[in-house]
Image (cartoon, one colour):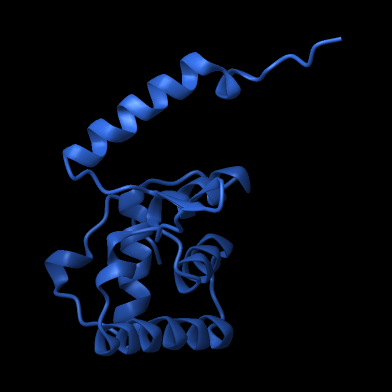
Amino acid sequence: MEKKLKFFETENFKKAQKYWYDKLQAEKFPDHEKLVGTKLYLLPQSQSQYNDNVDRSNYDITLEYYLRLARHVEQEEFKSDRDRLIMKFHSEGKRICRIIEALQTLGFPCHRQTVRFVIRKFEHKWKIRHWQKKQMTSNLVIA
């Protein structure tokens, strides 16, 4: 009984693969795979360009910002569960779109402007950042 070849083991696939690898190499296209022995492995990629180009001072400032947020989130007595969750997720470094998704799954419908307003409100209150009055507007009145 013959062993059935997988598509990437066939002669046609290997010819096409060689053609495209040669073409990419001729065009100086950066390879995202590394050949180790006879196996190709994907090179690890950072989640954002920021991780590739960060300098130590920016890293330290960002770390201090999120540590201060986390400390204030633990100490603050929030009037609203939604505000508490927004600031908790933000202090963990989640993006606004991910915060909105998490809130919606927990039954707190909201908009990105609302999330941004709540973050700015508490940054201003905790003296982490200073926002001008015109930057503190929102369609929702949050007490």
